[in-house]
Each structure stands twice: as structure tokens, then as C-alpha cells.
Length: 154
Image 1: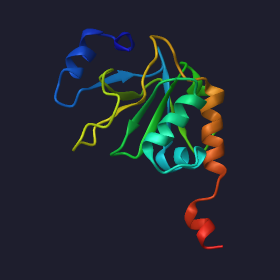
Image 2: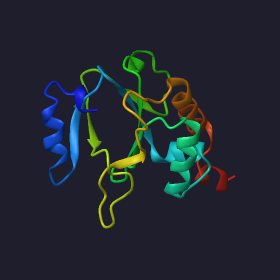
Image 3: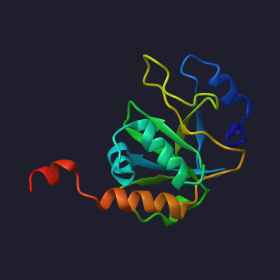
């Protein structure tokens, strides 16, 4: 992950800070698909974050996903260049020219009493990313399913 930064020592210093978050540029090593929590939870038919994360890990074949509980988003890490071809309006793909806050590799669950970013699906090995087609399926299914409030009002 640190190799995504022009100065690979910088992320290590940032990961050692209080936030344990490094800002990494997108577009060279990976892009990131920003998926709203509501879209992901509809796609995986669950409201419990731990259940959704397990289902996400299975569907994305262990591809890495960051959860931002404060911003109510997930970020699926995908191959660089994905942003150029992204076609799902329910989720946005971020690429070159954008920085992403990436949690320390050991933050694999929500720290008690915090709202810090963590790995919902930890990186299995260096270079292992989510496949664009798998993430696209999540975005398309979650974006197409009705909101519970829409169903309740019928």
C-alpha cells in the first residue's frame, strides 16, 4: 500500500499518528469505488455491518474494502484505470487525481468508542484487489433494489 505514495515512508509515519490513517494517491496502484452504506446493505440484504462485511468478503473473493462509519461509505479497492470505464450511478469510482484515506493495515474492526476507518475486508496479500465486475454487481444490485421506506409506503 505504501508504494502508492510518491514517498513510501510518508504513509508509515501517517499510520503511526493518532488517526492511524494515511492519504494515498489513487490511479497508480489502485482506484477505489465509493459505495454508500445503504447501497451495500441493500445488495447484501443486511443491516448488521459484520454480516454485510462477511457477505462482501465472500462476493468480492477477499478483495480489500475499507469501511468509513462516519461517512457511511465503503471503499472497494479495484485495479488502476477502473475510474475511466465506471458505469454505475449508485457508486462512484475514484481514480487519478484523488487521494484516499487508508487505515493502518492492522485496523480490521471498528475500534470501540471511535468512528475511525478500518478494513471491512482486509487486504489478503499485496496486489490483491477487487475485480471491477464484482464491485459493479454490488453497485448495480444495491442501486436497483428499492429502499425500505419505498416498500413500506406501498
